[in-house]
Length: 369
Image (cartoon, rainbow, N blue to C red):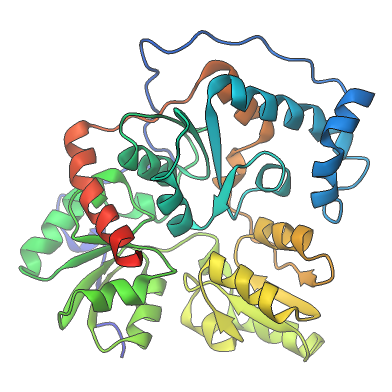
């Protein structure tokens, strides 16, 4: 069914707003370990031998000319992880040299949230955007959580505040609030349960109520509304990557090659999803390609994911619309190396907010389990 209503910050007077892209940086821990010296980043025969197996993973998407520029930093990162008792979590939108060559755990937001609860290392380096690092910290309050660049924000997370949730609750008393995991700790602390694009419909229906508030992604809300009889009250948020895709763009791909398979993320507008052969989360999209092995695939999502799938499945031709997330691309090998050397930038959350935010995240994870 269509969504019942949609709201945004302009619908409430005196609603405080945050920066569109820059969350507050973390504060370094007072008793953190000393900085380590910068290792050599020269391309040598030893580096070539030590990283040869990693280049095999990415040789279909990284050229032999590029590899000597990346390999020394990759080798240094992988060695420093042991020294720092650190584990790297990387989202599917990270570039191949990060995703395939230094990450210990990869996945979509739900997979990373679940795996974050199982980490044994004392330090987590989150290669993704700030709300993902916050989620790891919320689930691991006694571990050090680092993000290589705290400016890695999210247009969805910045579209709504905890104050907005309180105003919505005043307007719709008794209606449960489902928050996309792409939100700040401040927002999560005010909601009933979190969801990701992998489990959004299941989460909404698990509440066994006739109506929910679903926020902040208006397009994911419309997708969920099309899959359930639960009435949806939505928020006027959008992913700046996915909302740029259009149905006309997809029709042009089909006209050029009628055999092409198009798979899309549910954060895309409805006219895009209507043209897609499959709609699903990043994890579901990857599994679809693995299972179907179509000759040519257009992945309607952030561009680096197509590179990561291509590296794994070189026989599948990935046609790249290539909308890049500027926030994900703030995370680089050089910044990961710096995080390991200096233990910056550390993510900190007010303990009261973190405790309140943990409950809706754990409720989501418990539903999966």
